[in-house]
Structure formats: C-alpha cells, structure tokens
Image (tube, helix red, strand yellow):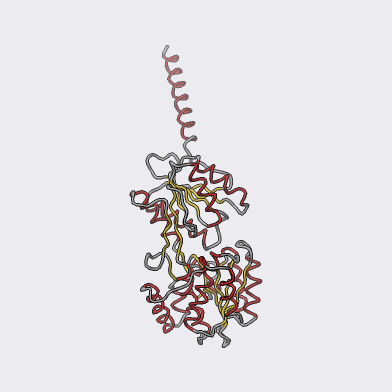
Length: 379
C-alpha cells in the first residue's frame, strides 16, 4: 500500500512540474519576423507600460534611427516600461502591414518617425483608437486624436552648423584651405533635407557673406558608398568641411574625410562620439554634429503620456529653447575647434535662443526658391 501511495505522489509531482514548465515557456517576450525583442521584459508584464518602436529602415546608422532606439532604451531604464524595437527594413510595401500587425498586439504606446511614414501611421492610429501613437519626427501637422507628433527646428540648428563650417574654413585649423568653400551632402532633394540646407547656407553667410557651398544629393539614405563618392568629389574640388544630412549614406562622408584628411559635421546624433571607440582618427575629423535630441524627446513624450499631461492630436516643434536641438560640444569639438571660434559660435547660439536671428525654413518654400538659394552660393 505504501508503495502505491508513493507512486501516486510521484506521479502528481511530475504532472505539477510539467504544467509549471509549460506555463513558463508561454510567458516569454513576443517577437515578430524582422524584429529585435527587448530581453528586459515580457509583453504581458503586469501593469507596466508597454512601448514598441518601429524603425522604417534598420538600426546601425549612428544617426536618426539609433537616436530613436536610444530614446526607447531610456523609456525602459527610466520609466520601467516593457519595450521592443522592430526594424521594418527598406521595403516600404511592408511598413503599413507591420504597423497594423503591431497595433493589433498588446502594446500601449506605438512609436515611429519620419514624414515618409506619417500618412500610413496616421491611418493605423485611426483604426486603433484605444492605442496611443507617437511620431517622433514629422513635418505634417495633421494627426488623429490618439497621435502626438514632434518635429525639430532643424533650420536653426543647421544655421549654427553653417556658422561652424564657415568659421572652420577661414581658420588656421590644420586641414583648412584658403578657398572658403564648404560642402553639404543630403540624402534626397526634399523639403525635410532642404530645411537643413537653407539653414546651413544662411548660418555660413552670417559668418562670411562670400562663402561658397557645394551641394550634392545621394538620392538614398542607406548607401555609404555613394556618400563617399560624392564627398570625395567635393573634397577634391577644394571643400574643407562637409555637413552630413544623409542618414546611413552619410557614413561614407566620414570615410572620405579620413581619406582626404578633411573635416565633417555630423547629423541627428553626436556622431563623433558614436564612431570614436572604433575609429578615433575618423571621429577627430567630425568637428561637431547638428543634433536632433530624438532620444530625449521620445523619453519626454512617453513620460508626459504616462503622467496624463501629453496633448494628443497636435505637433510640437522643438527648438533650442525646448532643448530639442543643439550641436555636439564634446571633447573633440573643444580640442579640434579653436577656443576663440567656439566663443563666436556660442554668441550665435544665444542670438538664436533669444530670437535675435530669424532663420528661413525650406519647409514653406517653393522649389524655385530653394534652387535660387543653392545657386547663389554655388562654387
């Protein structure tokens, strides 16, 4: 009898262990094809805020997308949220289905960014009124009631980048030449990129009315080889410093700068610091970067949403005053860019903050007007 009781007890323990094992395996983080799941939590984790970031491209650009991913990491670390990033790739036909698939899952907040995705992102938000959506970078005002949009005063921060470039080219910095010609490489000839360009040109002209600006467009945001090719042409023509506004394509600018021992200005993130650990020689040629503080903006928006103070259905433009934009003033900037020139840049920045300088914005310009500005400074 004792043996029968013991056998029965052992059987019950085995059943219990098996059941617990199956239950544990069903509670892991959900994943999707083409996504990277955050290892730090479970999608069904109690009352924690669940936040997902959808990248219309891939990570690794050391710029726009990586900055957004840093913002998501801050949301996880500082707000204790369950997070996940989904890389949607470069095939645009897959973006809208991915938005809808993710929106149908158990996420409280769905984040993505870029004017290219805005229309389809808005459409998804309208289909899922119980979810909250954040577009971290769009120039389109219209938004559903459950969507919050952000953009950045890129014309103003590019004005400051233009001032840096013009000061650098007329300086006695080791790699500067006497021609007073600076460069610009953009991803595409579109209003969002030309907002950077017009600000850059006006900032350079503020320092030197006679400065010349070589302008090239790659027609692509994920082609470093093309970025390098266009940059080599500019450097070989006498350009001292090139402003990168080309996403992943812009990584090729830094390759060209290293090859020609010329200067560059980064975009969106502090690109010198992102590159410094792997290639300090290249990083030390990136004088500064024009930064959209996307990571800070994402954290701030999610925090306000969590607190119930975020105004949905609107778009905010973040400027120097909002700490939404700035230039990288890292150790490389302090060591490579002369102190007297840093002081001049600081003067310009304060004038921008105080609204003593008005910067035009290509977002409201006709194509012919942008073309006229480009032609006026053509080398």
